[in-house]
Length: 271
Image (cartoon, rainbow, N blue to C red; front, side, top):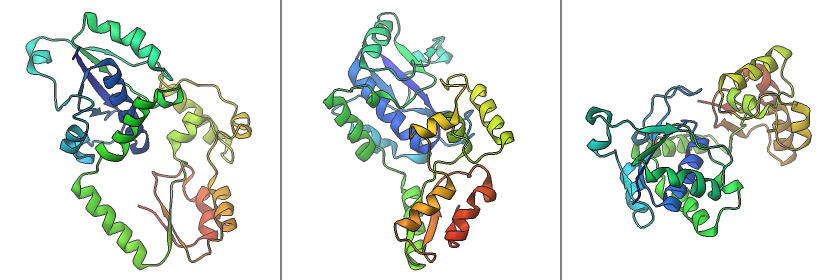
């Protein structure tokens, strides 16, 4: 192995899983030892969780043993306590294999440890070779297993919902950070649109800053609004007695934006 790849990743769960898939693939591509990821506690979500609070660490390590060497932590000689200063950098957004092979791999001629202090999940958007794509799938569907506590809670939640009748788990993708990142402000007030714009500028690693919302929407790059989602569910034949479990963070615009969905489906359940 050439060296160690250390990661700090966001705690938005949907993004987190894809980021880990990508970074395992990068470690495999570059023949690096991967350190179990740290989670970013200073991100938008301000989640205090550690990796081991969410995922089964031993399952993560063991299930990928034949593909990537993974360690729980760096050897002591590569820690600050022993005078070693780890080189930190974020990888360039939307990069492909060539970037990692030509720009990142040469760094290990001088470094033993590289810390990606921001990571993303766009590797598969760039013509990834089949073997690495298979590895990403293996990470997502085998290596990343929730802790027993989370799985028990999930089964309990599903059991309660089933006892009360048919339900749909709905991830609206309508949280503040999602709308800010995508620039999709259809249905928002001018004040809200400005607030979302300011949030984009607050995070320098978000690539796009000035976004024309209607252009994004016409390109099909925006999530359905809660109002549109209500129409789609009705068109699919779901009736008013169907429970709608909102499997997401806080909906931006709160009750105002959920009003149409709540009217169409009064049995809304959220955390």
